[in-house]
Length: 269
Image (cartoon, rainbow, N blue to C red; front, side, top):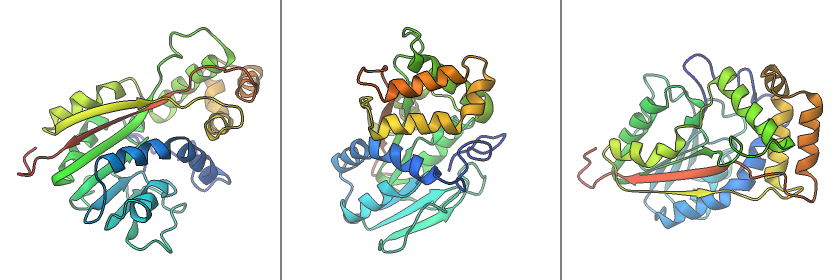
């Protein structure tokens, strides 16, 4: 479920039909699911909750909500749901849809969750407002996206050089922009949500870890886009990949900022 107003995330990069793409998504899930699910548990997700998981990917968070948190139902939405297996998980349903479409209105939910989705949308401001309207009275909107705390000002190591090229290439090719993500708490308050709070998690870059493998795989799949920026060449990408598997820390990985806000019981936004 990722897209821009001028094209869709995955049409030119990270196509769902490509061999190994579901595995790349799962590597990201292994790096971040524990943090996401801990936050959802702390917010009280449980029996009686009807949940919307936007940009559900392979459905790891959706299945956790049902199997571990015990929520009543989860509607998992993605623009391409071929990697989302709902069989064997009672209460889980999949919807193939583009959330940027004018007619996207799947109902109202106690939890609306979107992770690594809005950063890829040029219409992100409008989509925050739309997702807020899908939260039922007394429900919560939870948004997570990437934040890069170091690469812009850090020394030019192989890792930071390739990360800078990646962010530029993704911005120029599919519209990815993470510069505004730290504003999430203010944006949620602008939508009338209350009890707004946020947290940041930066997982370590450990050789062989899911996160290190995720970045190496992401660079490989976006190699043409990285090279097109003119910031890196093949040799620099390979040096950065080797740094991810070395004993020394290659740098600080982009982290994940999660922000949440509640809709009042009266339903006012």
